[in-house]
Length: 206
Ligand SMILES: Cc1cc2nc3c(=O)[nH]c(=O)nc-3n(C[C@H](O)[C@H](O)[C@H](O)COP(=O)(O)O)c2cc1C
Image 1 (cartoon, rainbow, N blue to C red):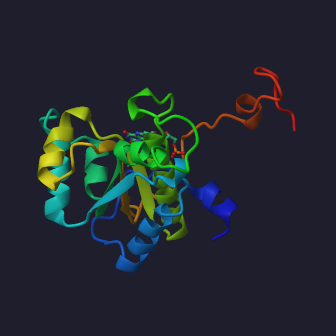
Image 2 (cartoon, protein in one colour):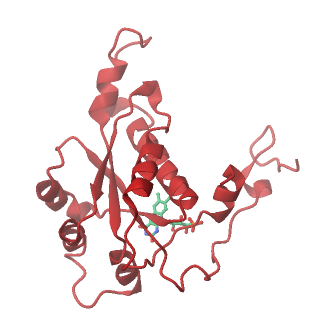
């Protein structure tokens, strides 16, 4: 698929066809796309924790919905049907180590003092490539937050090391049959709103 077509089609899918698994080859390609993401200093401090068995997914949803007792709402019902979940984890330690190497100019940087948390940015970039590759595979995907209250439980459940940060999760799967026809309700800001021509507030008119 052409890049512009992928960009045009991309939107978050929150309802999945529980009866249709993601083909292993397609999943492999989607995951591999994340490896193409850029990263500060080529630190590439990110990991993808892939949950694709019912038991793994149930554990994830149990840990992340502990404080939501009662019947599942529409969001949860739709998302729980996703056959694959990818937890996108950032590794700040990889940046501290990389920027302490000899080929990086300037003083060693303490990761805690960095103005921009590049580990989170870079993990987000990898997640975006997952979303775009999913479109290319004809799959639906949705990036969503992992509640902070669930982090400790998830670490214990899936062996996630203490230094890793839960940046986001991505659900993957085939859309629910009636989901494909639902038009996106997203109102996108225009380029004139977003792009500033030479000075903040100067509208971009091309
Ligand atoms: C950093 C980030 C966090 C998000 N968190 C959630 C979330 O927790 N739950 C959810 O349903 N969607 C989440 N989204 C999806 C946004 O709601 C969605 O991207 C936005 O409404 C635009 O719609 P579109 O992506 O379909 O064009 C998140 C998106 C981003 C980029």
